[in-house]
Image (cartoon, rainbow, N blue to C red):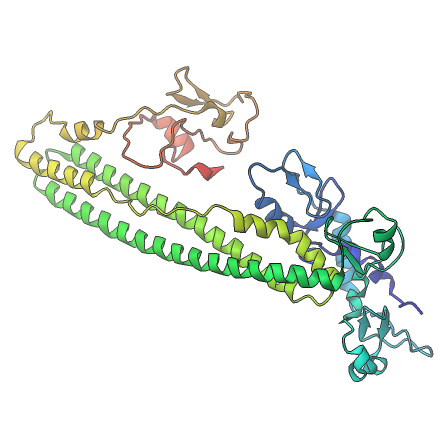
Length: 439
């Protein structure tokens, strides 16, 4: 006698995410009609290699562009209906006189048992190895859509759970076939080894984050010392060199901010990687704790790509040399000399800076469509009219930004910017430096 399901349970399988194996949380559906939790599919797409296309973790179909993630309102309604009907239960297959709620379901027996009829599974040695699952999850043991047989085998070549007929007369004929238990043991061993590697990588990442925090403290202390020395030198000559003092302090502060931003940018990348690794480890542990082979294999297949992406990801490099003591010490010495040799037209500080002069031009492919660039790309102005420009993934759509064409990863560089007051009032903070990943 087959198990009896209440109406709302008939579609529970349809509202279960194949990545996290849980009921959907904010379900979205891709164009291939496979659905996932929003957070699950975002994490999956995030770990795509630059040279690979985006793909569905369920059917492996590839997308030329990153798929749009739109909410599936129908699935969301189904999830809500299920949450309101959780009190309903599957009934025991052996209680014929009345409907007694089932306590567990046996995968091998394909039967639902109440507490009384479940007792032999704990008392008889021949039944002790049977896998028992919650009755609300029993439908996860699905039958082959083509042959209507139980999915008790696993095709290693296609990474799919199959029935016995699939391996004999179906499309998996002559493929390498394992039982679900054999496949579970094999993949479980692989995941266990990968878990060890991820734990090692997490330890290294934690150490790197610690180093970056210590480096940041050193940078802040070092620049504070330089600022204090600069202020002391300028006290005696402030009335005569207010303009030079302002430029010098701004220069040092800009250097400090640049160094701090650099450290923070590195810290952010390392912390994000640490979060990804930790979340993946938790997901692996969840999968490894699954007793149901089908649920285990499905979870393993959906997370394999993400795990390999993390393990194969190139490790970030920490550059410890951030404070340029030589340049800053030279600047402080030049201020000391100014104390005795200052004149109205003395521009020694600016001359020192000009030694690092470089030319920066604007990158038109990043410019917001309300910004107009000059022909030599050194002047930008705002316009109310939208300037139609070719599509570019680098273009800022929602913010009035434009990036420079040049970028620097090390060394000293100096350039000057002239800002008209009305433009500054319109846009607020309009000049600054950013890391390449601002997009």
